[in-house]
Amino acid sequence: MATHSVRPGGPSIKSPLDFADSPLSQAISTQPLLLGVFLNLQDIHVSSQPTTNSWTYDYNLACVQEAERQGFELAFSRMQWLPKGGYDGEASLDAFIALGAMASATKTIHLISTLHVLYGPLHPLHLAKWGATLDHISKGRWGLNIVTGHRVVEHEMFGAPPGGRIEHDQRYSRSSELLDVVKSLWAEDENISYDATEKGNGNTWRLNNAWVSPKPLYGRPVIVNATGSPAGIEFATDQSDIIFITSPGGAHIDSALETLPAHIANIKDIARQKGRDIKTLINPIVVSRDTTEEADAYATAIWKGKPGQENIQSFGQNKHYDSDAQAWKGRKDASHKQGLNIGGNIEIIGSPEQVADQIEALHKIGIDGIQLCFYDFLPDLKHFGEKILPLLKERGLRV
Ligand SMILES: Cc1cc2nc3c(=O)[nH]c(=O)nc-3n(C[C@H](O)[C@H](O)[C@H](O)COP(=O)(O)O)c2cc1C
Image (cartoon, rainbow, N blue to C red; front, side):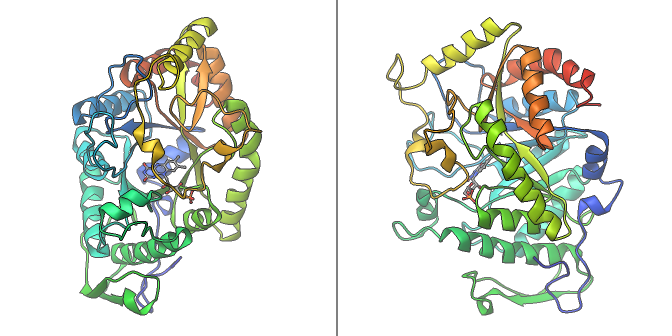
């Protein structure tokens, strides 16, 4: 990671956390537990159990506005590039553009755009200019969720030869170089020139006397990335403010609570050794109803509607694509409690009290924020606000 511009003698690179009045600093200093929503701008279904869900911009904006009304700090979306047949209903909006557009329809929530930085190739000057623009439109609430692409079909869609996915760890060194240059463009007080072909990382772009202005309002936009591998953790602790993690074990809450403490300690330790602090965010699906019995019945109904249970509908085709992701390798280990596999990276099922207990337990083991998804997104998010959020406030997890 470059702590200074890639231009020799260039200025130091500041983050939003270096500014006490940045929206990110304000959120972190006010809230014991960050709250986010993990949107789905894709027509992908887990189960035949009916929902109001929709991939459309309007539906997802309504979710973000409801989350903002409840005081949530973060919104971002899953983003995948799948060939025909990859989405259950064929539609998928671009998360970079959709979350950026929401900046003008919201006031306080952070909007984090997921972007595959290695498909393209993407020129760092484009990214620096887009980022500075969205930073100004959002007044420092826009951020970037950097994804490096773990599915071979996606690399192929962008022109790689069959099976020609960029090697796992090289994806992080390439992305790191790109981000060093983007951050430099945001920090610089002079034009910069840079030739990536000289560095041997596989990047092919060059900049001659490149300049971006206006500068972002608080040093740079918020940077997030999702990973579970050693190379990805090195990248995140160098480059990001927030690391989006999942259970190294199974999706069941017991397995998550058992395996996360060592994982979080390792991440925080690596960051500390670099003189950095990084916030951990995890993505549970919350399946809740007023009583335990009702919540269990709801979770069971979702599970029964999955393909291979009582019906034969085929959902979630994307799960079959070849991936070299390490973040979910615990899912293949039968010694971990795996849960129902009904969406979300971990599962929180129960009455409002039980959900609050599980969220509190996650916070106690070092989770700094939860990025929530729901089976029936908008009504379940409203249920969260009415029944669960007050309990989190009573317990001092939310102000
Ligand atoms: C919580 C979480 C969310 C993710 N969301 C996305 C996503 O929306 N799009 C995507 O292409 N990859 C996504 N990924 C995959 C990561 O970006 C990464 O490619 C994958 O974890 C492989 O990297 P790793 O081996 O370093 O974990 C996600 C990963 C995690 C852990």
